[in-house]
Length: 193
Figure 1: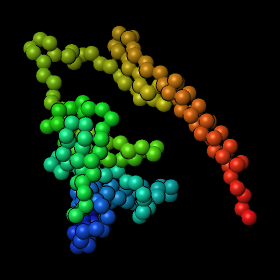
Figure 2 (figure 1 turned 180 degrees about the horizontal axis):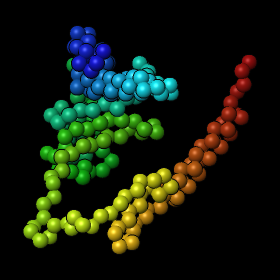
Figure 3 (figure 1 turned 120 degrees about the vertical axis):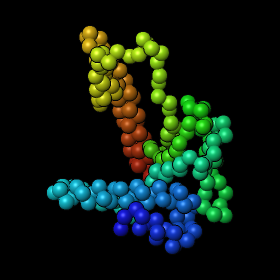
Figure 4 (figure 1 turned 90 degrees about the vertical axis):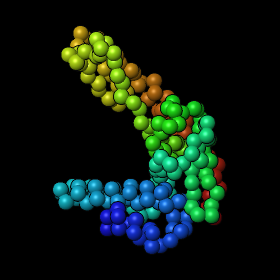
């Protein structure tokens, strides 16, 4: 069943099917599930035996709301909930870098035990006065990497390298510290009787 069929099932099942989610949020979950299912089916048909279909139940799935379904008030975002449920107010850690009228969608997601609000905005295309446009003959290559988040190389041998070694070292230290704390707690845990 495709996305449209899933939306028809959602409409027929009535309110409360997705608990506190409104219909826009529920359709967002259905869209992600449908896209993941068809991508896995396509990979399997191409012979990729490692492709897995999405599990039916996941605790935390990214949910998207489009322009007109949410409200931004300073550093607070009001997200609608299901019928008869109070709206969810999310407090932002910092001010949005875009004017409110440019925001087109928001996505609420959870990564590493933290909630994030991904904001998509429509940014106007840059225009330049005559004679001040960028030179189309100048080219720069950008390489996104693992050790170094990105490197940029210009035509005259100029370059920019952002090192990610400090980020990786901090992550490894945090991981080692977490493992050590878990081992210490496990030793003190009561055994089975």
